[in-house]
View 1: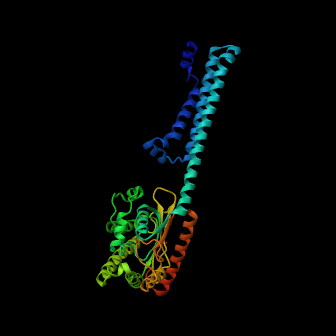
View 2 (view 1 turned 135 degrees about the vertical axis):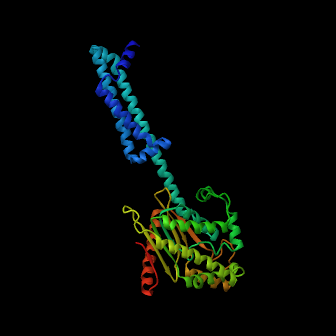
View 3 (view 1 turned 30 degrees about the horizontal axis):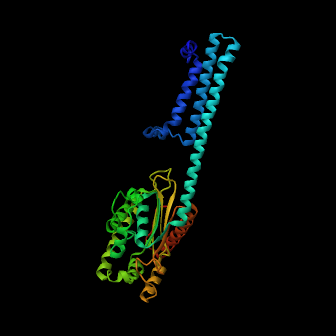
Length: 387
């Protein structure tokens, strides 16, 4: 006991050992700081990534061990102990301590690796589920996903759609609105929308307001929609001919919905035109918006806020499909009931975050935008290209 007390008194007596111990403590602290709640903001300010923090922790423990070893050697030297006593009384303790330290490091490394494997497994399962299960049937499910995706959108946004206030024309159909309102309120919906109850009319309005703000705040925005006259001719008129829309979309209703679509579209045009083309030299800042007569498909691609991944919603209804489905419905070739999952022209779509699939649809969207710009230039129609 007396020797131990002497050792404690002498600990830190070596200037080199004390220096190594201080360096080790500082390195371990900086390496662990990002794991300690709000203190992690300090790590963000000094820009230490996870790899850097890991190396700091390793080096910190090494310096601590060296400092303690130097202090121990200095202590033993000061006591002028015979070699036999050092070997018998102190060397086993040192060996046990080293073995314990190695075992501790091995356990930490093993736990870290197991955690990484679990994350990889969860990501793989998520990717498989995402690629195989997120099939969407009908406007209620498709609008729900589009709404949440727009709320999450960050850094990057691609929109190809008949109407930029997506869901507006469908929210006036009671069977669609009621089906949407009865859908389960998932945790994702609560998190993304900050709402606890669904109301399609309110959500459609919030979708439009969210989009208006996003086209200004998101660095890379790409939009493709219909020309003014084609919103009526190639979208509203065919849609209004479908059975469940026909009784609702009388001429006054078509004029009302057309006016709402035009208002949102014009506000978004004004915002895209007013975007600063280069607010930050270090960041690519793009604002493109073109109008066309027809669309082969509708889709939304968005960078998901706080995550390094993209979400992609594909709505498999373009101009030709809409016209064909409407004519078939008029000729009695397909039913148009929301409850009938087996109908031939049931609105199909899917959502994915699988990178390879998202890249395919992003390439398609880029090609459609490039073709639209060329057509707008040829027709001398206005384009809004902040690229």
